[in-house]
Length: 455
Ligand SMILES: [Zn+2]
Image (cartoon, rainbow, N blue to C red; front, top):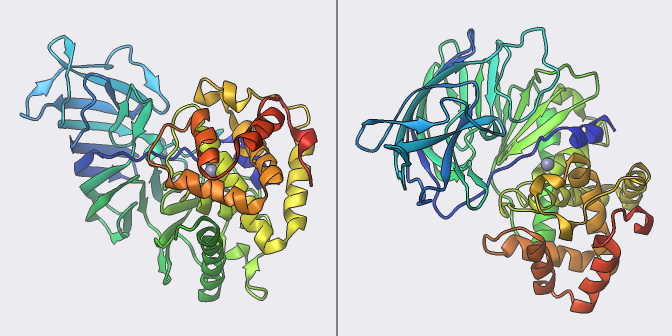
């Protein structure tokens, strides 16, 4: 329960979006584990043509030394004074004289900042967007905006996924990992990815454990524990492949890290930056029942199945627009229920939906077809209530056609994932107009559908 509860309160899974053209990050990163200082000298190239409708987002903890244009000239920018925040970042707008610099294509940016080190003390919260030092490691995901993230104003989209070729330097660090490449020995190493993805950083003193299908960072598992863990994850991947028709072959990177928020015993927290899954709050080896070759705690299975499902809803399909949270989190959560049902039987899914319906009896939502702004789908809506809507559709059309619908969503060309997308994909997957209208009437046009869910 603690795990599920956690999913409802933290914005843990803000993943990124894919674009025909992804920015390319080139340069150097200097990290000091003792002082929490991060200094970067980057050139950002291959910036898509967004006219004047773009911003450069950088974590609010950084101070910009300067921004230069493609000719290496220092340029002006807005946001250095009385700047506007967007999530974790301050928004900067490069200028050409007193006008917005149009289609910069390339920008050079140097900056530095220092972040608190949590060593035997804590913040009130931890989340994916925090730059977290604890004296031993640094964890910084794409959501933290530790590197300059281009924001497409017109499409309301963050271009978090980048190709990169960077050098990372961190004295006293035994290991350096940049998502998209292999972990490498410190204190200095070069990293590159020609595939656009989220360059999460995990740097410090930790062990690397390799298995045939995964790399484990900062874990201390026995061979037997690693084998069980890997087999459980492989089973989830195989289930999704079978049901959704798309293989998930990439090697996972599993990071065990320490949250900068105090976690009571038994509470764990996870987030995914494909293909990395980061877990805080537990000793992963200790969660494995070696004798019975499974997780000791049966709630671990749906917990990981949710993160693994983000490969599909988060990476293969990269949601945006009004139903961003529904197509990111409600789908991943629904899939995790199906994967866990396949393992433990309908007794699991029935209990899941019964529990959800009891908890949400008095919960009121803005119906999906009336959502005008993505954050109207808050934490409880996206993680707990959204899966009930998908369950409602499953009740009407059956499980097989439900997977056909999800498959159709995954195969859709990059589109705006709004309510029209939901309807269009349903139609494209073979749901008839009469079925859709009935579904809409029952499960969409209502502020609460818990009474309609069968379990
Ligand atoms: Zn999630």
